[in-house]
Image (cartoon, rainbow over all chains, first blue to last red; front, side):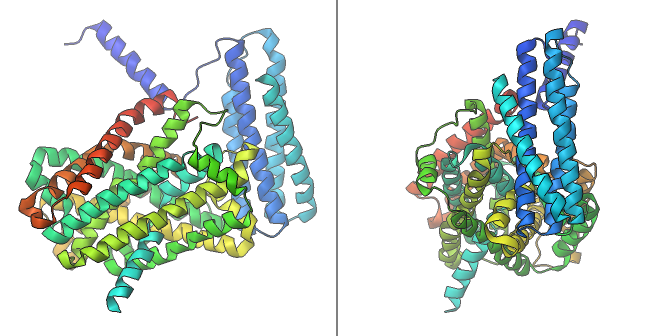
Length: 152
Length: 409
């Protein structure tokens, strides 16, 4: 029969294995780790914004069907939620990091709004709105890129 | 002339049937992140699958028996069972991912939620497995899968810097913003995608279904040594298209829609229609192949009547396995698991199971009791042994790399 200590160690090992293999992110322990989380969130959001911009541009040029473009934009829109949750659920380790949190959450929120708007425009096939969405998505892509680079 | 057409048809279906959801997703993802710097893995994987597909096809043609039948007889029921369990777990996971891939392809064409498509797709796959002739399944989806050649045309139309692509492929380097562990994690995934175990089981069992004999070895080898490498070029084209469009912008590929986007950008809606046809044919064809592989392997190991060349009533247990596999696949997907994530895991676990798949084939192909004068020669054994070392390294490294990189994040 296993001792209590051995069982506890086994349980801790299994739990750690499950967490690590499941890709879970531990809470930030210091400012450096928090900044790394911020960079990862900004880069993921940049990827979604820029990919969505490509899809909108292709739709404006009639190179994608409405169904294909809508599916792409829906995927990008849905991908933003987990990115916001992943970063937003980690508390800043120090008061000095609150500004960073506000900045990143603000950019993620703007990107989420832009993706939702673009999804609706594609679904309605509103070409004028799509042109505005394209401009906004490109701007956001650049802003997210600059913010991520500034934190590296 | 009849033989010429048989060879041509075999090569074409081998090309069209080479790519499945694992190849599509892994090559798109890797191309966007690493460019063509992991192209050497595609070459390594294609040569490896050629070596073992030829070996297993030769075993089927000479012995007229299925791989698992011989493995159990030659290596005993315990080793055979270990081999069966590992291979089947991976093949069932791949089967599930393929069904998910079909649903995603249909979503791109219709914008109807994939979870509504999954039961329909499951029913369609099962009906095809139950009712449609083996040759029809192989030829129709294999030929329709040729539509994926559109990736090569799109790559050309996108006007890439060919010298840069060649430099990436010929002098592979880890991109500056990626770690070595992530690079090698995706190398293992790409290798697992290229050498998926089901491909050799399906290929050799298909040979038994089509009553290959030693006289058919020439046609079989033409399919393998011409069709598979040309199919591998499609993998390069998918990775190349993703590299040209996404890599410079730092875009990561997470969806099937993104993988087809470069084709739409380069060729418009005609290209898009072809890529959707290719996605559908590649995933549906692979779903049939993986589903049949599950049924073949279990039935061969347990000594049941198997195959589509006999009436379903005479192979009732084989068809029951097909039905249950389809139910398990559909049920797993309806838990709302992401099919793309499932695919990424399936190719990595495929790498883990590779030694258990390929070692017994090498043993059986060397046994002159079964193979007579068609047993492995020096070249086949040298290549087979080299690849056993490579798959051993990939299998050992796969899980640690998955944990260290948090599945490639």
